[in-house]
Image (cartoon, rainbow, N blue to C red):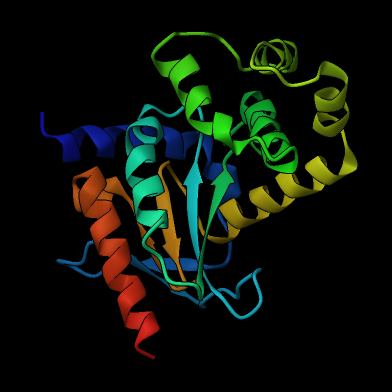
Length: 211
């Protein structure tokens, strides 16, 4: 089985869990294209910058595999482009991992981002619920009381709600998926590879930068 076929099957399974998230915005992928075009295009949440959104889930093995490529690509983006990672929850069991990402961001500890992927996919630690997540974060040197307060805060709840809105608005059916400038969506199921996804996203970005 090719990577493309494997990814397609994985995305199809994820899509079944995401069926309730469909939104009025449509994605159209023409024959031969390796990306979908959004109609209508979506505005940026970051003023005066082109947004690149990576929809991901810590529990997703494809996201873990593509993470180093995303990090490398992010370092090459010009000043008028911002890359934001958007944690996706296709069901309630994924919600605490969303909160984990935004809590690390709020505490300026996204240096632990890669460690989360490693813990889940290499070390096979079941850090999917609040208690296990908190114990793991504390083991990495983060103060328990501070993390718990942030994790359960209104601000983190608001960010997860916005992530859910974006997932719905962009019709994200599987992870990883990359949205470029509110106009295009690219994923490994479309391109057949992780690097191909980055390459096509960069091509779409180049068209927007030329405008």
